[in-house]
Amino acid sequence: MGFRLGLINDTINRHLRARQLDVSTAARYSKLDNRNANRILAGMRIHFLGATRTTTGSMYLFEVNQQRLLLECGLFQGKRDEMMERNRNFPFDPKQVDAVVLSHAHIDHAGNLPNLCKRGFEGSIFCTFATRDLSSIMLADSAEIQRSDAEFVSRKRAKKNLPPVEPLYTAADAEKALRQFVAINYDRPIRVLDGVTVTFRDAGHILGAAQVVLDIQENNRKFRYLFSGDVGRGGDEILRDPQPVENVDYLQIESTYGGREHSPKADAKELVHQLVCATLEKDGKVIIPAFSVGRTQDIVYELNQLTEEGKIPKVPIFVDSPLSVNATEIYRLHPECFNEATAKFLREKANPFGMENLTYIREVAHSMKLNDMKEAAIIISASGMCEAGRIRHHLKNHIGKPENLVLFIGYCAEHTLGAQILAGQTPVNIFGEPHEVRARIASVDAFSGHADKNELKRYVENLTGDIKKVFVIHGEESQALAFAGILRSIKPNAEVIVPDYKQVVEI
View (cartoon, one colour):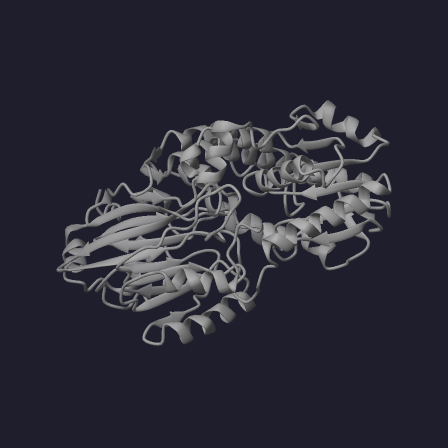
């Protein structure tokens, strides 16, 4: 497809080939905030455009062989004004992107793809089969959230005689983006651009999650660039372990828990047992905010095991999220992602995500009936950070009662409602109104789909090759810097960089 810089005249093209493109022309046609625009275009360049010293909005633009490859296209979550600005406006022209590679379906990695396609990207989006299937429901769900948020903001603006706002994208935009997906299996190399071959390796994070191996031939040299994606912990109850990758020259790695250790999984199961039983004995309700993909299936599996073992009573359990229901159905379609124990359980016994006392809820009317329940129950609902979805209704109705438990089993980014609750803030605003936090608040981070500092360290130690540079991304600044220090100790010959937002690095 070429670099597609637009209608550049022959003189500028000659200058580009001679690598003498002046600063103003480079800035005008690349449409990038490029602090290195006055440098000679000597090799592959990476523009770090999201999830730098934070965990949301993953997006990285590669310029290689006069082409553009976008790695991830996630939604940024945070303060509303910054969120709106960053998600609506790309720091590059989507029409000039040649291909997209997607590691997994979580919204902070895939959620802005419909907007990218809406604004002119026409190339292919490469991912695994399970990622494609999960994206089909997650992007549609995200479009509905965009519509709802736009309506809410527009009503507030109308009171000030201001014009309405448009949603970031629509369900039709999400459907259009899905038509551009190209699914390939793990360990099947595919050429995505001239001189660029992609291979997906299992990352063990969520269903279909992949490490992205980029084998690049540029001019007279070849090298291997590994993007870790989100790295799973290993030893997962459901998924396979992250696969080691060989012959790595350059590494880009997440650091969500780069400075922390998770509690042991065996301890976590016992802690869930104790917390749940203590709440149910008081006829309280256990409210579990959980990501629809990954954490919901994990906690359902654990509750299934605890119930079978007789450790918790058979109280009603509800998964109250249409997206979670759909995602769980997709999980059952992809046994290629399961570890041997789960695959065997599915073949020989029963559905690992179902039991007699478990109800999956799609309809709003059924969800609303949960508010009138007097008896003890467990309610699992999205979103995991409590920023959207039905979980906010359950918190509104139950967070003020001391007999109840709000149990967090995943990560909450800074400034989210989940993070405020975990930090002990009271009251907290839910739907714009203050609510006192009287329920017990607990967190079990062993259910996290992200490797901790020791597991990330082990992941890097299992890689082979002479790693020359390591880029530490997808972690709050403290976590990214902490893991960078660990990397310098175990890879003393590698240059370790914690990129800033919009920083450009040349390989």
